[in-house]
Image (cartoon, rainbow, N blue to C red):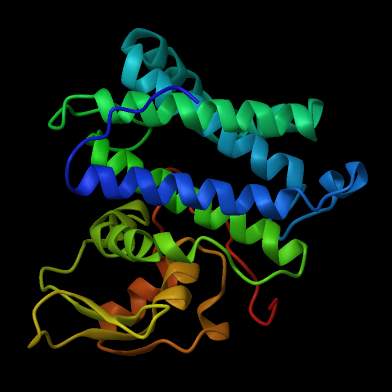
Length: 269
């Protein structure tokens, strides 16, 4: 692995958690037989190979956005022309070399991306398919994607959810993308802040927003992460809330750029 020049503070923590999450998911993948890579996941039309192919492809897009803006502009143009097809084509790359070849390509991409993020200017606005973002936000987005697609895989293999060490970052992104989720649906974002209080894996309470906010969400950090990554229908989760705007948000929350997709059916899990 190339030597990563670690940044101080938040980015260092993010890169460490991202590396750990990738390693945990690899451990689950090491259980697979060659035929297992073709198992269908809860994402319609996507096998396990598609899921890892998508992660490897998105890492490659992230590296491109950090290191070659002109090439990335071309990718954005292609994505705008056919958003669904663009993503599907990237995921399908994983099917061709499913197995050890795909694992090596995904691992190598993660290593290169970690170096690119660690050496980027902290205040640089990196272009993306959604709003541009700083390296810390891009690292958070990679944690979110690793959690979400890793969950599709562990669900398929009937394993417990992985990536719990990155949950706080996924929850943070879920809160930060509240207004984006409303705008994505053509709705005006609420002006008032929400209070979000979540119980982490070790029982600690994580919170966002003012304590005296009139509209709130309370519950498990894992379940909130499942909701905002659209891996569970809200009816299958035990998230308490009050307020009409929060109620609407729980229907449309999404942490990722692009179309929200159909999400998961209720009672699927």
